[in-house]
Amino acid sequence: MKEKLAFGAKVTVAHVLTYTLCGMLAMTLFDYQSSVEAIGMRPLDDPVVGMAPLFQIARGALFALVLWLLRPAFEHRKYGWLVVWATVAIVGVFNTPATSPGSIEALIYLEPAGEPLNTSVGGTVEILAQTLLFSAAATWWVKRPARHASAGSSPEGSGTAKSSDPKLR
Image (cartoon, rainbow, N blue to C red; front, side, top):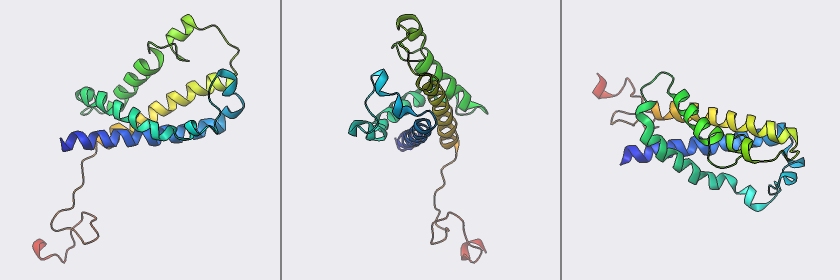
């Protein structure tokens, strides 16, 4: 159970951090403020939008649940992050059953709405960059061995024993 919770926490934190970082960068680079309302999104100063990182905790936990089930496909592979990214990008972006921007369903069912180029291209670049960064960060962190303080650790808890420790003589 402890292993599952640690896995879930790492994946969730990786998602929340990469989501927040990429979202803030994209808002600046692609000037979302001038175009989000035109496509029916809440204004960026809306309190609900301000709480978006908090809502991402639930999304991160859902990613963790799915990745826990799929971990044999990526955890012992050199390029396991690529397996995670391909899964997230294909299932979550391009092949989602919703008519989300960038999806195959949107190409089929949505009329071109004259969406500003910075929003459509910027949104696609943002989500692909975020999912790539998330996949690399989450996979690296999950594969990284846990570091536990041992009985011979320094008082600072760094996990390294000092040579003056009588147990090491």
